[in-house]
Image 1 (cartoon, rainbow, N blue to C red):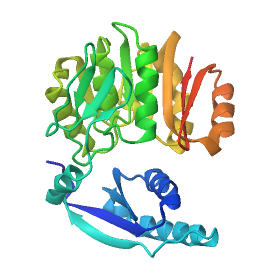
Image 2: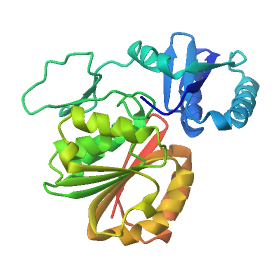
Image 3: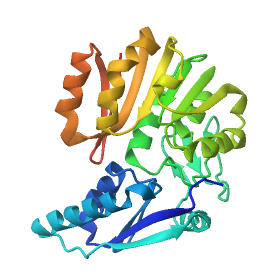
Length: 284
């Protein structure tokens, strides 16, 4: 069970045209998950110490959407006991066939796996990463295309552990996974055990400074642009000349800033994938 006792829940009634914008905004604010229904978008936040700033940001954003003529209600804000989290997720987390090779599902669902299809079971609890968000799907797609057998992988901002688990299932030799959220670490460890990859995965609470510099073959980071701006100048100590890096959590409108950042730090863009309003990159 997570160390978090309660969660901030923000629900907004809105026309469907505003749903994607609201989900993206919740994600940028650090939401651990969002839920979309016919006329409502809900975001869940574990950082209750920042609830006042989160509430203020949401109120301002709703006002800005109204100024663009979107039909949208005032946010409904409440605290959700931690024990109710899994009940909420059960309502809308279903199997996702991310690629023809990778399926992500909750343990309580079944999936008729095709030949050579990798099925990953994820219990989300309080951590981000169920395969439903565009940025996770981008990373899984790029990971499938780029991973090499016996790669040593660094997964920064692991959340539920989904990318690290997928890397091992796709042939990586070992994954070192990090997250600054103390609630994410036990969840990632539980998911590693559930998917029979725990012996190949080291999961730590902390920043990249928690890892001794080493030449990883592949680095994964599905985190927001502001964190990437701090991470990318540090990453040189953790890669070699043939390493590849997969980044997502980047809004398409931020593309020029990210590409300038890559150029400044002498990374070559190998591929860019867009899904919805989000970009993901392979760089070298």
